[in-house]
Structure formats: structure tokens, C-alpha cells
Length: 442
Image (cartoon, rainbow, N blue to C red):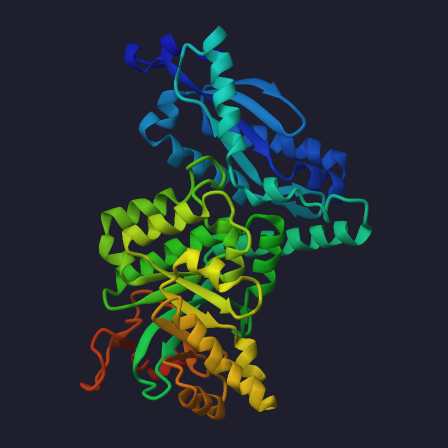
């Protein structure tokens, strides 16, 4: 038992009871063996001990650890922020197992402060912590990895391959080896008129050739860990907005990340919310995008998440519109500020008049949801002309994005043409020395 008399003044003699669950325990055992699960639980316990001193471990089951942490260590007024930081740290540090790097998906349920932490108080605290843990929306716990934790050898192999890709990408992000390329959303009639720039994650090899991170992001999503990446990248976009007061930026996040209950109940996106509350002007220049599939299966707290961001002034963008995942009625509940038509419609528009007509029809449907409709996938002059003829107000593609070198140059400068709306921004010209850092055509 933690000696509260030794480490706390009388008014702070209380504990929080925490139940820490390894969400992907079954998948780890299936993909790597039972010995890997034993090692994962030991790795988890060591990580927890590194955060709390002293700590009183009360119980350990197959996939969960119950402990008492001194309330002063968690700062009772900010317990959710501390739990998010703990989850992020435990999940972001892979466990070495043989030649493999295994990411642990962790969720935490917490009690209210418990005076003394004994007897009846402890039983109530345990019930409270487990109740909060039950309400956590962690994708890894929710989906249970039915394909990865089964007996199918190909499913286990895919899980291991996904884990390798995911651990590598999170490591690259942590070491600063990834960067943003910026793709403009522009008016096809006046290409210098820019609505915003999209953040696209990239990395470079030793020769300087740039690559996207799509495959690794998809692996993180299948593992139920993509929210770790999403939250880190959104904070980077806030850095960009702070560095350039004229920039208007957007970034796509997974539908899995649309919740405040990731890792712990009401314990996600705490740093993000705190920064927006300190700098509300950043929210007005930020758009968070999510796929229309988010409307098909609302995760717990999805609408609460979206409505909270909307109240803070963040724009909400929906991409993949028309791909058949959701009905207009479902999408209307999400109330997006922007809608992007699925790029497949533009790629197939020249195959037939019927295909071409679908673009205009979809744009009209999208306008019933919001006022800003964007056609993506523009790659050729012919496609730009088609976009103009079909009345697309905004398009994305066929433009050079730029590597983000925050504070090295402005992401966006005011439009020089006085006929253009001054609220929009256009990319600045980069020097000859920096042109080599520009990204490929998207």
C-alpha cells in the first residue's frame, strides 16, 4: 500500500485506482505466441512503474493490471490529460520480441480519488474504474481482431506485417523523419485562387525520393492504433498554423479517431483541445477531414466529438463522397462544412457521357449537405476543363505540393490578384535552392 502519510500533505492523501488493459492481448498471443503475451504484460507493467513512484500493483489478469497511483502524481484536476499521456507513451514505445517490434494497444479506466484506498472505498473505486474502461472507444478493444487472432495463418502473417509497418512509421514520425507536403485546393477557373492547403504525410529515402505513407497508415488503422498517428499529426498542423497566421490548412484523420474516449474515458485529444482554447483563432483556419464511412457506423462519442470541434470553430470536411458507404440522410447528421467527391468519378469521367454526368449530379447532392464542394483527383488539363464545365467550384491535384519547412518560408501568401477574394491564399514562390525539396505532382 502506498504510504500516503510519508509522501503527501493531509489534504492530498488519496489515490486513484487504475485498470490498465492490453487491448490487443489476444492478437499478440495469436500472432506471436503466448510467450509474447507474457512479455507484453511484463513490458506494460515496467512502463507503468516508470511513470509512478511509488505505485501499488493490486491485481494482474490475462490482459489487465489493476493498480493504485497516488493522486498527486496524476494531478486530480488533469487526470484525463495524464492518462492520455500515459497511454500515448505506452502505445508509442514498441516492445522488442526477437526480431519483431510489437506495439501495445492500451486503454485505462480510472476511479475518482480514493481516501486511503482500502476496504469498501477500494471496491467502489474498482467498480468505477472498470465502468470507465468499459466506455473507452479504443478500436483495438472494440474490433477484437477477429481476422488476426483466428487460426488462419495468412491472417496472423498480415497482423505481423502490419505491426512491422506501423512500428516503423511511428518511429519515423517520432524521430522527425517524416514531413508534410502541401497540396492546394484551388479554383479551376483561377488557379491562383486558393481555398486551403492539404497536409499529406511523406518520407524520403537516402536518395531524397519522396514516398507517401498510405500503406503504413492503413496498417495502423487495421491494428486499431491509427489514432496515435492522427493526434500527433494534427498537433503538427497546429504548429504550422501558429507559424503562419495566413495559412488555411486541412488534414485527414481516420474515422477511428473521432472520439474523446480513446485510451481512456474522456481522455483523448486533451493537448489539442487545450491549444485551441488558448488560441481560438487557430480553429478558424483548420479543417479536419474524415471519410464518409464514418456515417455508416457511429463509434461511441463520434457526434459529441464533431459537435465539440464545431463549437470551437474547427471546420469539418468529408471526403470520399459518393463511394457508396453512406446515404445522404446519414451524412446530413455529420453536418460537414466541406465535401470532397470521390476521385474515382473524375478518373472514369471520360469513359462515357453517363460517367461524366455523374460528377454534376454528385456535386448537386453534395451541395445539399454544405456550401463547399471539392472535386479531387485532377491530374491533367483536360480534367481541369471538365471540372470547369461541370461547375466544380474547387479542385485538388495536378499541382506541385511543397515540403513543409516550418518557419523557413510562408506556407501561404495573400493572393496578389485584386480580383480574387483576399481571404484565400496562394503558395509563395520558392527559391532555386529550395525547389529540389518540392514534392511530386499529386
